[in-house]
Picture 1 (cartoon, rainbow, N blue to C red):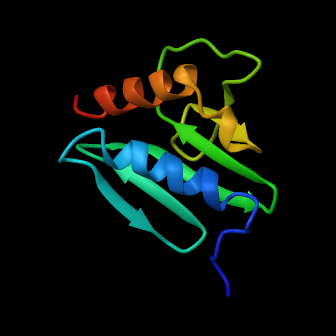
Picture 2: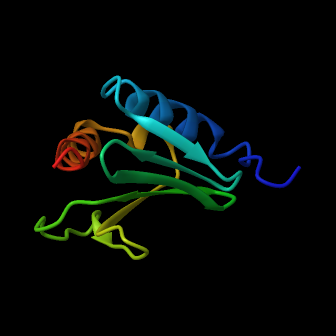
Length: 106
């Protein structure tokens, strides 16, 4: 079925979606079948399973320095992190997600 996440990324998508939705009551979620976008006043995160073995997390983090893990993004997002395993969802990633959420209220 088009838009259904591959088995390899489904646990990553489910866990990140839960984390993002629990950031606050003002989180809006929109899905086009291939990606899931999260916003409040402005959009702040996008989960995209463009690759069957990888989930890309795009964030809006203006002014945040790039790292080996936090790479440049496009389409209105400033940074992107690629995940291949659920155990890559760590405190560092959650901190970036929370920062993007906080910035989206301004």
